[in-house]
Length: 485
Image 1 (tube, rainbow, N blue to C red):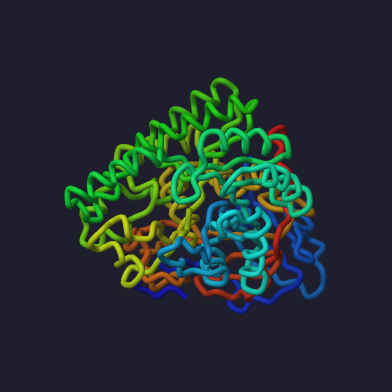
Image 2: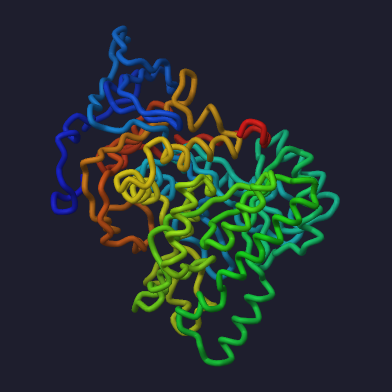
């Protein structure tokens, strides 16, 4: 339970199961929200699936667990399509594995993750990392999961293997990096885009101009500018925006190959994607809570190392441009890029040299409540738009719908119940990851997830984890199909 000092106690809390049991379940008279509408209704769950949704359900199976949800929002469980669990970045391994990472996700209202696998050995096949990550997750994940393929190099064998990954393994999206150790040049990017379109896969890209960043980083270090704040100086927003524009043009050359921009942090890059969409190019955009909530003033703090990630935090004016993108539909999803390293140990590698600090921060548990509080409760987003950003569009884009991201008969019973009256001051001590901090410490939220259900089983209740390691299943995703979007 959250401590009494950390939240405003709600009358709704008493209606939530304190000792939930698996089995048939009726969620009664909640405000049921999908991507289209919100209405008071009952939801019947049988054998891990949604069996019925109706204004009132009167025929109830025996031994049915009943949850009184009056006053609560009942939504599809969150789908976070950008996590990095158990990733080895060369200088450190992230402190969250597939148990602690999915545990935190569940407690924050997320019921499915699609993890971006890390790089494998030089020259390895696409299947190599998939096999490694399947071993990481299969006995530890507490909610359902899938993976994005990772393309480290391009040759005829890799191009041929893409079809097998889609058809046989259910991996229908792949990550391309324009920076870091296994960055792809434009020729290889173009080859990959052409083939990914052919085999029914969505290309996701980390867009930053590696050459410009390398030059700026070298210049700063030579000038003795090694403090954490220079991380952001070394990777200005123009480096990100230029790479976005370049990827858009390469995707056009690849015959309008579908393109998904991960972790967008700035308005200029967003304008490039708007221009592409105005020209009917298939481009989709993701942003993250850190870019909506924080800004580059964090790099002036004594604990600035906590905020080293790429792309870095931007000037405050960029936040409002991203919020506008959420409101006007220019941004399609909100994910986290959860990649956690401990502040007191792992992040300290960068205290005398920003370039030695492992990039990334935690956030998988706070995504849903932050967006609900800042978006829905402050009137920026409707409840249905919230669902669209956190569940429906992620499911549609990444081949999970209607098994996930839907409130309809036959869909997995993945649900989150939000109490709009519950006030929480975010403290890391309340969270369930393995990091030793949250970048959102002391942010006040209005509204909080009080119950998370994964395939009919309660995995989090009133801030307490109630799930079990290994209950998460690998989800084979359908090939990418732009016609359903």
